[in-house]
Amino acid sequence: MNDERLNALFRSALANLPGYPEALDIARKNTKGNLWLIGGTVSRLLMRELYEIPLHEFDYDFMCDALVAPLVVSDGWIVSHEKFFGNPTFFKGTLEVDVWPLVTHRYIQNYHLEPTIENFLNGTPFTVQSLVFDVKKQRLVGDVGIKSVLDRTFGVNNLEEARFLAGRKSVSIDELMKQKAESMGMRVIPSGE
Image 1 (tube, helix red, strand yellow):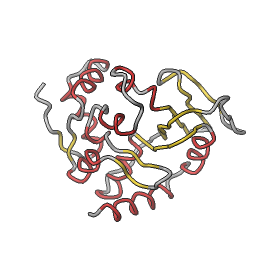
Image 2 (cartoon, rainbow, N blue to C red):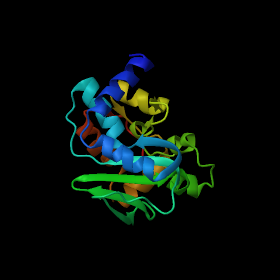
Image 3 (cartoon, rainbow, N blue to C red):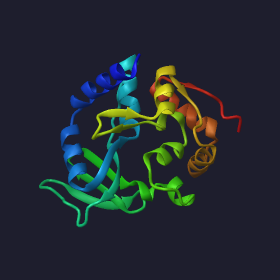
């Protein structure tokens, strides 16, 4: 599948996701600069559209250049700062929206890297996570993540970050990948760890 068809498929599916317009609106109101949809919503939505893998409950995660101050909490929304290094999570009914600036990403902080989407993608633990949707350009970004989805493979993207995440969950890297890959209908590429 070529890039344009994949992007069109994703945009169409995203436009029909429950809560996405509201999630995008609250993210836009609270960010400056670039805005990317990240996380499981991107990869799992693609898996659903390409391979009819069921889309389970999910939240919306957005990465941005910067947050506005003060935050804009629209009617019906509440905000919490209890996860992701104190970054805001917005709630409205069952809708959950995480918004965080690139500068707070663990990999970027630990290595004192420039806060770019490329550095974010390089720092994701697993290949399928190295994929984002650029809201302004309306395009998927991340060759490693796109290849992972198209090949239906789940592997290590950044070994150090994969070790950290697996250690935090008290499982091996391969066990963690197996758990996540099974829920997405993907094949694990063993880490060798």
